[in-house]
Length: 328
Image (cartoon, rainbow, N blue to C red; front, side, top):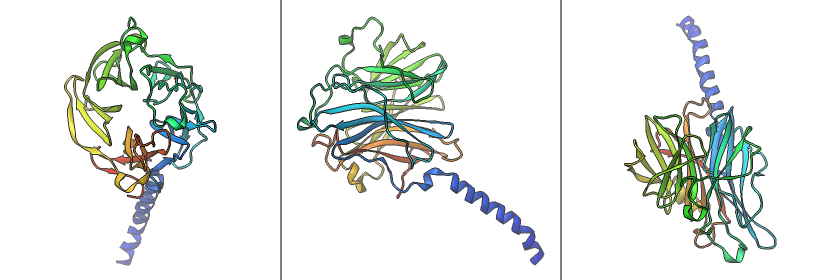
């Protein structure tokens, strides 16, 4: 009997080592707080967009800062991390200009040898802290920037999602772009954006776009492709909703809103929104869908916690229905 136990011992040790190694590699298990970037009375972190490349998380987001003179500026900014705990210093990617206020990056795609990020403007000229909150003007439009390394980006270029003949004025107010490849035709790309619910346009060259239509939806669209269907994450008044479609014309609502631990989070009590989901199920150190989002609070956005006290958080799921987060 003792001899048999000795034979089994190496196998047991190997299994234990394998489990320990797997636990050490799972970076989500090491997180102790759902907050990745914490806002305060002069700073807000909003609208995350994320990419995972070669073991590095690239997080892009809206950075809102109130300066000492009372003026408020928005930027598209970024930070990187290998473990979701230690982040590089925040880097601003867009200029300081209240008449533009580039923000709300949707996502980053790889297209013909370069990365393309979609984002928007949110003009608020002469905006100061005593006016909080004040929302963007009707001149908000969509833009793209390009990069070879995910760190250095070109100046934004207007995204003509209503077609090359549509004037700036005719395009109308639009925010929150998101780019996704067609499930059938890999040469075709779609841009989802907030206008009349969520609107959709398509292009085969990322320059010339054709308007397709729209469906009822909240803001901050994020679209995953699974089993030749589209999964749309969007943000209504509060929480994250899900819709699905196989043809982009007929959409079905998935019941229930994703609110994660909002009831226990004072920092997200005002609103939980802006969810973006990465499918990292095949990554050995993750094995989950990861959702980045932003929460504002304790006040609602209308009460003032819009350009301040907004933080970026994280949650994850194996099936897009049941969600976990650090400390749950």
